[in-house]
Length: 338
Image (cartoon, rainbow, N blue to C red; front, side, top):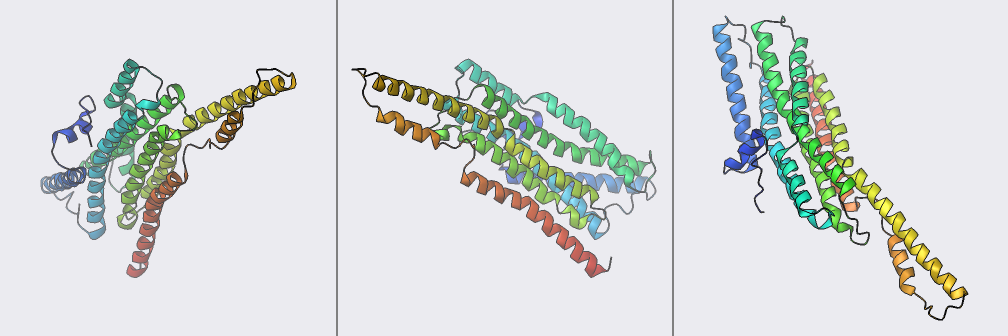
């Protein structure tokens, strides 16, 4: 595939273009680096603060939960780059179906590559609030070194997740805006707007993979409440990412179909009036009837059966992982008598 220019994107996305490694490898390296840095800092704090962090990272469930956190950080950073890169590719493939001129198209492309910063700033604020408040449920006094460290660690962890989700929603709303204003609908060739379905499905895949990894916390977390909330939010987010770019497109197709049918019916009515009036120039137009039947058969839904099947498969990936993790967590609890 041709390379995609993301030189004006946020640096957390741009850095992937500067490293000649595949996305999975980059994600694993980032996860490993995150885990090592967090572990080293925790151990250093344990030695310098008289044992306050002595039990950090010890115990199967705590250690496993920290590993999952690191895997999530590596995944969401790689997924953020993947989502933006594929959004640019999908937009480029839309060029034949857009009514804008080259200048407008290049401006929109530059806007997409640059990424609107407002969603990223808003997500950072939410991450700050979440990261500060979430550790307050733990048995440590506010302002203590242990509490401050957990707040910093949680804020950094949530920051990457919220940022990736913000990138996906920014792309979804961008495509929704394009569908409202610039898409040229060819009723007998809706394949031209297939990139909208591709964009919607990519968003679902990214979120469902996040949900699948997040579900592991149900097994390793002593209190899985936050994990379950995250799973439900991810499921809702996946549905939203699927519908946001497709609903405006569906409305455009429906409006175009209604308009075209009205035009055809008017032409048929004029022919009938000419025939009844005995117009010598009148000639039967069977092609109008055939064309009308073809237009009537056009579905106003923006996704076909393969799209629905892929959506179901992606959704089952996340939901199935969550159900499997919940089963394992309950099985372990029964086995260990807890």
